Structure formats: C-alpha cells, structure tokens
Amino acid sequence: MKTKLLPRTPARSWHALAPAAWLPVLAAAAITFAPAAGAQDKVLNVYSARHYQTDEQLYGEFSRQTGVKINRIELGDEPLLERMKSEGDKSPADVVLLVDATRLFRAQSEGLFQPIQSKVLNERIPAEFRASDNSWFGFSSRARVIVYNKDNVDPKDVQTYESLADPKNKGKVCTRSGSHPYNLSLFGAMIEHHGLEKTEAWLNGLVANMARSPKGGDTDQIKAVASGECGVALTNTYYWVRLMRSDKAADQEVVSKVGMVWPNQATTGVHMNLAGGAVARYAPNKETAVKFLEYLASDQAQAYFANGNNEWPTVKTARTGNEALASLGEFKADKMATDRMAARSTDAQKLLDKVGYK
Image 1 (cartoon, rainbow, N blue to C red):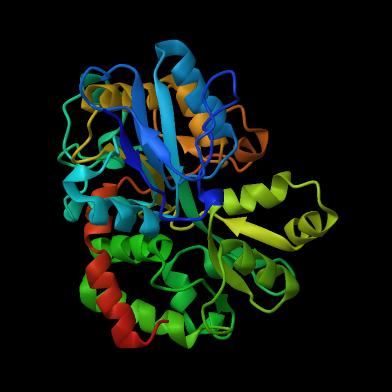
Image 2: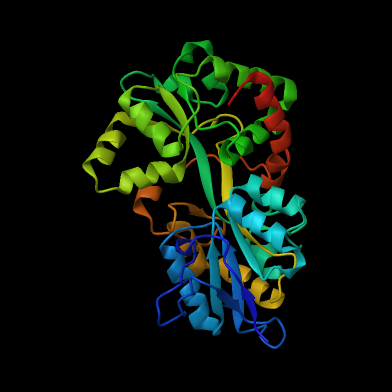
C-alpha cells in the first residue's frame, strides 16, 4: 500500500529532480513515496534546501548509476525543518540537505537526524566539516570574507574581522541581519576564539561602526559597497564569485569597484562554513540514504555539488574546474570544527540582543 504525502506548500516548491529520462515529474497535487518495506534500493526521499540547477545533474547521475529514483522536496531551510517536525515519526524524509553549519547543528539538536557509521564518509570528509557524532557531513565549503570600496577604503584597514570594530572604520560597515545563520556561525567562531567578553566588545564596535541598519542579503552588501553607501561589508565567497561570473554589465561594474580581503591570514585564518547533509531520524530507506551521502563524497559528485554554488569541495582530492573560484587564489582557512562554532550560535544571539545588533 502506498503512502501519499500531501504538499503543504504551493506547487512551485515541488520539482522533478532531473530530466525526464532519469526521473518522473513529481505531481503538484500530491507526492507519492514508495513504502519502506521491499523498496530499500529503489527510492530515496530527499528534503533539500538547495536550489541549484547543477544539483539536477548530480542526482540524475546517482539515479543512473544505482537505479534509485529520487523524490525531492525543495523548501527553505526553516520551512523544511518545520515540516519534518510536524511529520514526526511518520516523515518520509530519508536525506536532508541544508545550508550552513548553524542550521545543521540546530536540526541535530532537535533530534531530526540520526548518527551513522560510514568508513567512506569518515575517511573522505575532514573532521572539521562534520558533526562529532557523525549525524551530519559537509559536502561543500565557503569562506566569509571582507569586501571594500576601492575608492574609499584602504584594504590595510580591514585585514581582520576584528578591524571592522576599529574606530577608524566608523560609518563604513554594512552587514545583513546579525541573526542570520551566516553571521551567527561567524560570531560563534569569534566566541570560541576570543571568549564572550571580548566578542561582546567586538560586536559593540561593529554596531557603532554601521553605515546603516543591517538589511538585505550578501549580494546587497556588495552592491552597497560598490555604490559608496558602505565602505566595507561581510559576504560569503560564492556571492562574490557569482558577480564575477555574471555577463551583466551592471554586475561587472560592481566587481570593478569592489575589492576582496581574506581576513585574519596572519592569525586564525578566514572563517569557513559549509553546506551539508544528514540521514533523517526516521528514514524509511536508511541504507540507500547512507549510500547517497557516500556518493556525495565521491570526486565526481563533489565537483557537481560545489560548482552548483561556486564553492569548494570538502573532499581534498576533488576538483571543481571553476576558473573564477580558482582566481581568488590561495588562503589560510580557519580549521575550527564547524559544529563547535555552530554550538555557540545561542550564545552569539544573546550577545546580539544585548548590544542591539539587529
């Protein structure tokens, strides 16, 4: 008997995972998942917060190699996790794909994942890019860098995260919301490096140096720097590379006016984050789910996974072939375990509330 999962979101949130030759189109009115019994090697139910065209090639190749049909649900990170919570032990989710270590850690803490044992994943995914209990694994990485206006800011003045709180940068700093996971992860790392007291003082300095109240996404920060509204901002590298690779004249003009700094190269290294995946707690097809995560750690899949969003593979032997990404050059990365900094996100939020960082 088949179990039907009725969508709680508009039809546009449901997508076929690959071309018709690989996978059937998911119905907009109702999604039918194969039962767990007797179908362990035939179907995989993926809850994904990733929205990249190259992922379709990635999953299609897995289906071609294994004969496993992938049913995918695409939602934002928060709606996806809320859906899993409401479904409880009846959830059909096998694999969950999320963006940012803070989101992965929160889902782990809320009991939505299950630890797994995989020699392949343990050998191929570096320890800093996976949970200490093996409940989630990072498959692509990104750096949180500093961008500055070439006409108005001396890059020597913004070589570290700490320098953004220096009085000489008063009225120049722009960021997205401090409570966004991308920033919470960075602030959690700062707490791990410097402690609560020093991080609070640093956040106070950031607030004092704001050119405007936090708003928008990372691309908005880059464009605000180019326009002169801001002198300096924080952004994930893939937003910067997207603009670099754009064929739009307006985007190329932005790139021509903005410079990028690898922060903290003489100290802790640039802050790193990730996109990753896990086996859902009540996965009806657990064995296939583990195989899928192992596939994501293959050199071939790593290139698809990382290129989809201009990121770096977490597997050291994998290559992307992304010339724009390679043009950013070599850098020193912070090797802090991502689950350590993510575990500090609650402390970071408390400090944000205390200093008035919106």
